[in-house]
Length: 377
Length: 257
Image 1 (cartoon, rainbow over the protein chains, first blue to last red):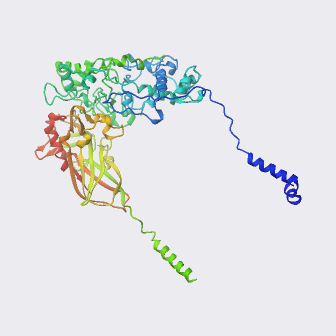
Image 2: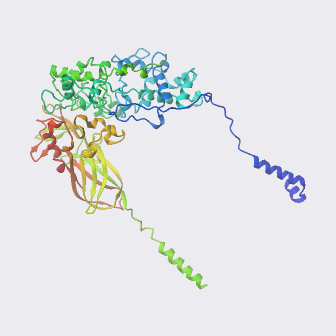
Image 3: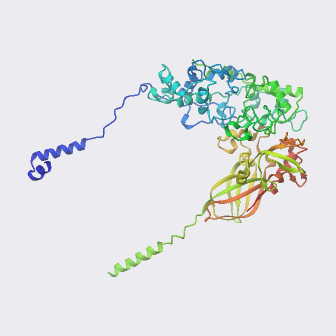
């Protein structure tokens, strides 16, 4: 009808209709979605970058660009680290097996989980853990701290819980949504995820760095000197004896490299006896790589603060440092892929005493009492 | 009309001059080059944890072999092309069986000028300039960042490590370990491998293969490095043993076609 009116009659009605249509098309806009403001958006989000501190001779502390550290992130991570909210019955958390007074390790061979079951391996110290870039856990199964944090929650021998339920707890909490907002800028409680929780815990864990105040560090920095026994022990530890038969190479530093006094590699240190590559009680690294030559190999822990981390080894089988020194002095137990560096050294009691004197210079009490690492809850 | 004809003719000349046959490609002036490092023992692929005849029915098994390589360069009569300033070779994961041992460790070097070359030069170890740096100076992805490969007591990187077991007691258990680590500037060695090599612009995978015959590291002008006698060399006090190994690099490394 309209075209006939417009063309045939050229009436005012047709012109007005045309004008109306034109205006209608001109003013039409796409439907805009109806949005509701996030329930956290009223909380200010003003992230402040966190600068990790490390001794000058330490390697660079690296982390993913998807988890840049902030002051709020580190604080949230510390709170989560010490919160039993991560376990099914709310009785345990990271802190249960990584205790500050034990240099973030603990004082038993195997930790007891919430159900009363023992874990399979000893709790490792978290001191300087952020510098380990080639795998975490004794077997290296976690690529980084963010991945590592997922395992204890899901482990039935440890926290025996699951991340979806933890997310709900955190979202319903009276305090955590605000902390997550300030740390990560989320707009709503429902945006709290396990990844953000693990990111926060990792940010905190990366702050746990040796203070540089152990006697060893002070000597290396030129601020102090070893006594005679400590110096001789240092020479044996780092093979600086230059052929002096009284100061043989104790082989320690091949695995316990400076300055972390640990390594990012995996070694078979002769702790487990096996007459085949498949006869190990604990496959260690080989259980992850499925390479039989990696069977029985474990990650090297740090010797920093060893005094507070007994018992030693992945199974806590060596109760004291004297036991450790005796093990290495003897050459350990046979296995086909025992590291060639593990050989009978037969250190004398005097040499063992001196070696231990040096090892005592590696203890750093400052880390045990630093409030920045303590329970904020 | 005559102007139109001239312009048409000119246009045709220009057009035809620009034409070329589809099968006359423009050859690139640079190609990627694969430098393949293959570890052998007595001319055969070196397989870790396998029996290797040391001498007179004494056998050894190798469990670790790694090297730093510095200043890898191709040389021609006119030029020297630096391929890589520093790299780390770790045969431990590659030499598990014959197939992986034959492939070895491969570096891909981008955009190498095409042409003929007559030698390849490389430093075994970390050159003195880089050896003055420390792992803390580098990000974790850099070959010089690994703390395990630095020996603070020497103020030096560990240039190479060769480790394994030998059956000194003939029990079949291979209970005796040997470890030879080299380091410090005085044991840094450059090798010059003479060989006619061509980076061919028409070839997709230009490859140069460098062979290391580990057995030749044990032999020296002075005779064998006696593993049964000396099972460890690691430090200035063991320099005589270390020098036996590094002085054999020139004969142990080769380029084969």
